[in-house]
Picture 1 (tube, protein in one colour):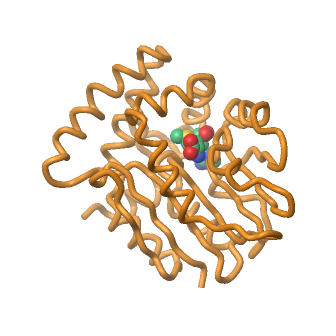
Picture 2: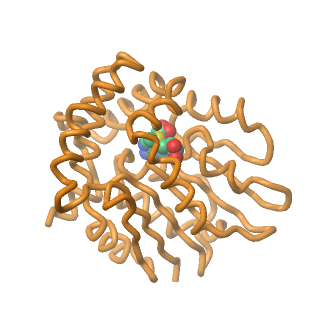
Length: 244
Ligand SMILES: C[S@@+](CC[C@H](N)C(=O)[O-])C[C@H]1O[C@@H](n2cnc3c(N)ncnc32)[C@H](O)[C@@H]1O
């Protein structure tokens, strides 16, 4: 089992060790370049599976009228736009302005777009009914601080849902490893010509902790009712938890 430090605070960027500030800066640079290609990249890098995972994920989230949802690392609003509607408050927070701008252009109504970092959420305590993060937890520099912030902004009884790629076990593992290390970066490079992004991608996928470690971290941070569901033989995973 990896040490909690590795999960809670990442200073790894690809194969390098950098300061948290530098990691955030590089992350913004990567998404600055990837933003125009993001949709196509998701399809290519997951062989289209992200669409199925998102459907399962969205099906687990419920947002009533007059409730609020915060989507962290929300990018172009893939999750937020599924819940925007009259009488609901939906906010998408992301550290990349180009990602937010693309979302704003495409999905103009019913969403507040906020530039910010997940480890310092600009919202009051107990202000959100639901907090979500899809394909974002792997990217944030301070996972532990981010989850503590999620807990802080959720109302008591509020729900947290996270969709993230994961490392499968068993027979699929070597195949997944080969695809993530060699095929996905090659495909991604053909679309964006950004070697830094794909060096980072490989390490972020293969180095991300497994579902049990994320579950243990959620419990340590103070969530209750922590549960997870593996998708596609463990290539992706949904975690859900409640603020007590
Ligand atoms: C792979 S994209 C996921 C986008 C979207 N949630 C989705 O489902 O497709 C990861 C996003 O995380 C954002 N991000 C990375 N680190 C962040 C941080 N510390 N705080 C907020 N957003 C962050 C990036 O800018 C990027 O838009």
